[in-house]
Amino acid sequence: MKIEIWSDVMCPFCYIGKRNFEAALAQFPDRENIEVEWKSFLLDPTIPELPQHQENIYQFVAARKGISYERSVGMHQQVVRMAKDAGLEYHFDKVLVTNSLKAHRLIQIAKTKGLGENAEECLFYAYFTDGRNLSDDAVLTELGNDIGLTNAEVKEALTNPVFQHKVEADGAEAYRLGAKGVPFFVLDRKYAIAGAQSGSEILKVLETAYAQWKKDNSGLFQVAQGTTCTPGNECTH
Image 1 (cartoon, helix red, strand yellow):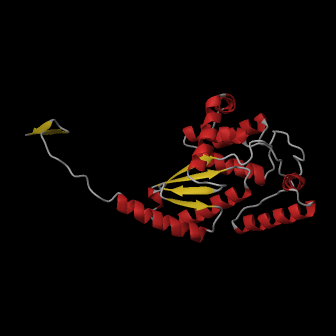
Image 2 (tube, rainbow, N blue to C red):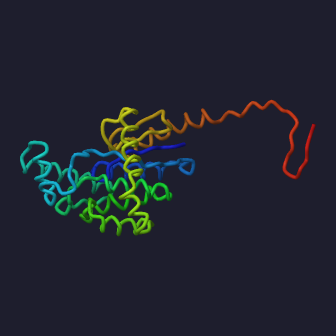
Image 3 (cartoon, rainbow, N blue to C red):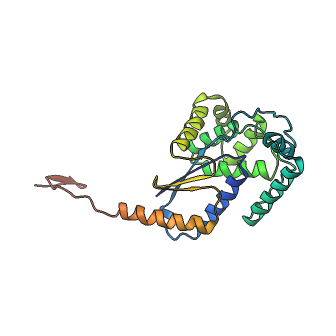
């Protein structure tokens, strides 16, 4: 059964949602029958690569939302606690706010190499824990190497317009499916989970979706038998 996950690497709830999903999947007995595909979702494509207050996410969010600096700090402290409960370590004091398009382009080429999950994990950690600048080509090249990409592949991701088109197509697809934000999980195109829900809640939906998928795919083909040839050149009439 296929599960598609839309996220933005600069969304704090997406990383938390990833950990909660992993916890749910670890408890799921048929996890070997689950295929996961990560998809891109740009939360704010209008953010420049070097935004005002780049080095102070508290001030950046305060200015964007029209709230006080103190309230912004309090909101981020609450997210830090949520992240800790999921086993993550967020350092908002080190975060460098930027447009996430380049990071998503890197994810798109990583997906073509079977490295999509590696890319998501690496970029989430780089942003929220290490405070790396995800708009810096040199940083992205280094992270790309860590994921398993070559320098040439990273350059291809950042320069070939096809990878931006893939990012945009993923976002458009999410909106068509009813997503209003991320994380957004779609299970077998029949069930959806919006937001960073707990591992136990994700597991419930996973079990329901899988039971339906198994039911839908348990029937045998109805075969109209005719003359055939089998391996070994044995032909029957």
